[in-house]
Length: 270
Image (tube, rainbow, N blue to C red; front, side):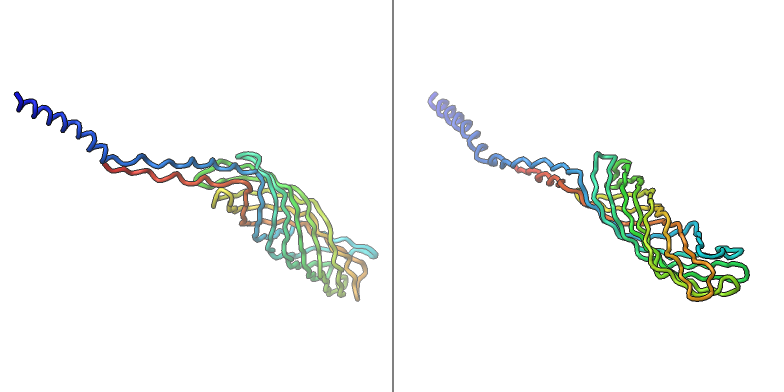
């Protein structure tokens, strides 16, 4: 009987020791992480910058004559206007996920102008340059957001400041003989644009932008051509300007920050 009591007491002591042994093997409680702050929403305001090249379209070319008779059979036979590079900046506001607007200003490099006109048995060769600066108010509609890409369309309206410089006239023949030149002249015109493109999110704040734009810059008007010899009338020229533009740019959004990545999972071993 005494032996049974001793064995029973030893068994109870062993059972009591098991929880204590397991408790010693448990890991300490996991560390407490501070909650991550929520991402800051964008203020909606952004700055933009663009560079590109424009395939200039020279539309209607017309000439006006004062101080003499218009040469008979006056005809424009050939004309050419070189391409120009462009650089612009702007500021805008993103109203929601599908509509934004901005105001942009851009400078376009000088494009060389050439034309040949005939009148009766004679002809005139014109050489000069055309330079434009454009200010536009633009609106855009964004079409969704797929893996960082956002396609869009847009339109703009504003003003163009066109300058015709270094215009010379060299003629030969009965009605077109003579040499002349025109002083530099600047003029303003209504400008409008249609565009389509796609932007890509580099970061939460920075977006790259590639777009096509049709830009109409209105009329550029030359100064009166003063003839040194052989001119019966003073001539001025007017050119309608438009361009097919390819642009690449960037937009920087203000006030937004990306949310930090979540903490790594806690791995425990027992």
